[in-house]
Length: 210
Image (tube, rainbow, N blue to C red):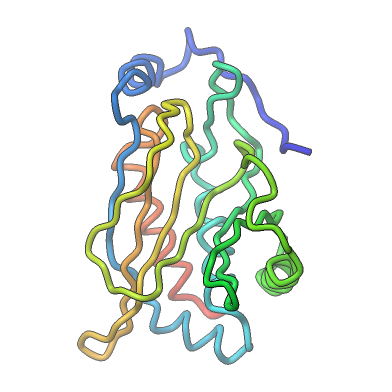
């Protein structure tokens, strides 16, 4: 069942004009890559025996849910604001070297989310279980390369406003562990200001003890 949402009165909405302009763009989504310092976070998740990938998905989802602009979507032509967004991530099948897309609802704690995500990913047999709902953040980690830029396939659906989060292979610089991290979002709802707020919130969360 999809998460609850509120239909926005677009005529009296502050983003009405911005939404209309970008909604009709040839490419309405934009992607930004920046670095995150994961020195403390990696140490913490290793100490607790948590999966780094699933732990990071949890943190990103929690932080993005706190920023209203990341919860807007188009549903049947209308602009809606979801109360909560869950997760959908790629998971590599080690035998076939093909990925599957796994859907996992958000949990209240990192420990419970990581356990549920790993269990679901390992037990799922299908590569794809059907079209993704509007109420997810998509994650597609790319841990083999420390990239400085990434692009994505485009289905041609201009009203696909699901944010997509990626990260590459972390590396050391000046004694710190840095992670290339990317955010793709629909410009009808998300501006650079909001990605900046997410980056700040993420770094703050990654610096804290779990």
